[in-house]
Image 1 (spheres, rainbow, N blue to C red):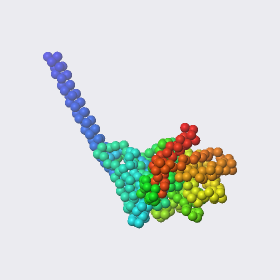
Image 2: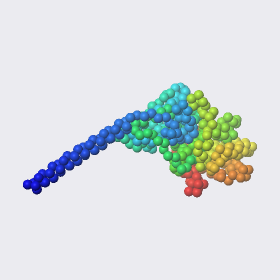
Image 3: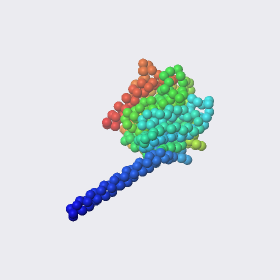
Image 4: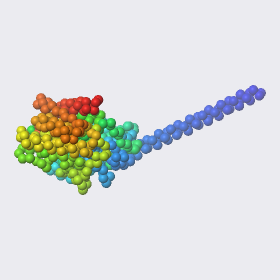
Amino acid sequence: MKFSKIISFIGAAAMCAMLFSACGTADADKKDTENAMEETADMNTETIYTASSENVKLLGRTYFADDLLWCALSGTGAEFTFTGTKCTVQLKGNLNSTDPSQADNQARVGIYVNGERVVDDMIDNVEENYTVFESDAPQDVTVKIVKLSESAMSTFAIKQLAVSGTKIQPTADNDLLIEFVGDSITCGYGVDDPDENHHFSTKTEDVTKAYAYKTAEALGADYSMVSFSGYGIISGYTTDKKVPTQIVPPYYGKLGFSWGGNFGQIKPSGIDWDFSKRQPDVIVINLGTNDDSYTQNDPERQQEYCDKYVEFLKTVRANNPDSKILCTLGIMGDRLFEKVQAAADNYTAETGDTNIYTMKFDVQNPADGYSADWHPSVKTHDKASEKLAAEIKTILGK
């Protein structure tokens, strides 16, 4: 009798335990479902961000003001990451964006998602909206916005970033930063137009296909470009007289310059660059191709180029006391390289600064083709990048 009651009690207790266990499991499942629904809701809730340094990694020399990130120089832009379901990028154009006569001089932009270019566009409206990513399920996403064309013709600004998902974060800095100072070759002039008889257009200019950008990629480095088509050390490109207004040194300490676009009401050339932000590990100077159109074989003009080159090296060093400086020339002609070498030697003799190097590029091979106005082809840029990357590794002792 007692034994029977004990069995009954044990059975009842087991039943209750099973019921409580079932209830606990049900409650846990319910909570998991609720949490999952909450997370999904969060991933689908849109948040608006500005492209400030707290939210994005700044690429090149950019200017943030009035909640706008202005981009002028080749390669400028922003990069960020998030986990979520959607991202829309809103850009602000400049006056060129609404002028049909300037259709070939508007800013060209490339937007990448996880390394793939998903937008390649000319900014021909005052505002442009691009939905660059959209997914039913949350994904880890890296977005990179790059100005493909140079500053002279046009600028644009990143107005806002609308993201559904986690808070956006800047991507991490790479260990190495390289600054490239150059002309149209560095800008990627005409690289998308394999007809040497065609002329300049921002539609066919793409800095990411030029040797400088490719060198940074090959070395896993961050970059900054200070480059203007047609510009030199003492003269811009000419078929006759000297063009002293088209020279790089006066703009080296600036955010660039532009005939066709300002930063709101301010000209890029009116804004000083803050050299204290991050000093480049290596500075590559590739200037002289346009000077050569003026100096030709004239010894006095070539010497003027050499002397002014020394002055420019002093300016670069004053703003970057610890950077390694590599002076290069040769892709579109190497006639002035001897003077580049002399300038580096004279600078060292005068200052005692030995943290300076020279390298001659191989002159472009007709068999590799040409781009617009006889500029380097993609194949030539690839070869130049390989040579430059190897030289930088040697300089860095890698």
